[in-house]
Length: 296
Image (cartoon, rainbow, N blue to C red):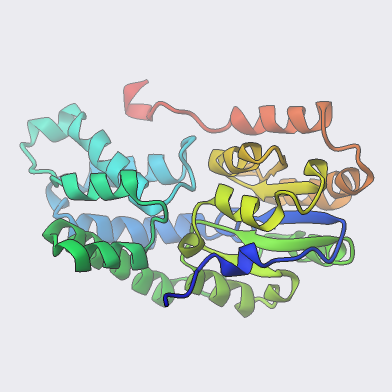
């Protein structure tokens, strides 16, 4: 019988009155730039034969993954969005570049509940589809490059202090779309895994699933807070009627300092929800556009 990857979330039982989910890349760690610019994007160009339009592929991938409202989404929808942005760009069309045709990958990404390497491998075993095999090779290359490249990147200032301060009052889990192996390596490298009751990555489902399985019905809704740096984190929190604290891209240090010195206390004292949270979210949402710069 296959082990249920979501079992740690389903079986999780509260030890404290409050619950905090924390995203990892770009939220707890300043790893978004290095992972996408040095690991994801070079492998996109290499594995999908985008060398003739590498400049535009890089611009599209950086926009989707770093500088737009889609920041932080799962790698598979992000990859498909990059292909779509390239297909409609005039400069790419003028060069006559042959872009990847990936109907089977689109179908898999649209219908699969858990978008991860293991679930993609299972689809390959069922179908033998060459496009899915190519997609898995790309994803595995990304993971290998991340393992080789990304190390020695500490948590943002005030992350460790915040987790330590919360640990006596709140249950903490990692809520991420990153593969679990990379999450465990990074959190253990910097000795903050000790604060996380569960480290949930892409193999355990979507972020909304992580929060639902670990916290829904186990805590009052206003005792659950998601800390994240991307609109997808906000969406995951709201899908479960939970609170959200934004780590603003480009102002992460200040966001964590504000959390440690102000917002965390408000959350624990019951004065976070309402106007205070709404003001923080409005500031956050204004930072990330939905239109790429070449279309403005």
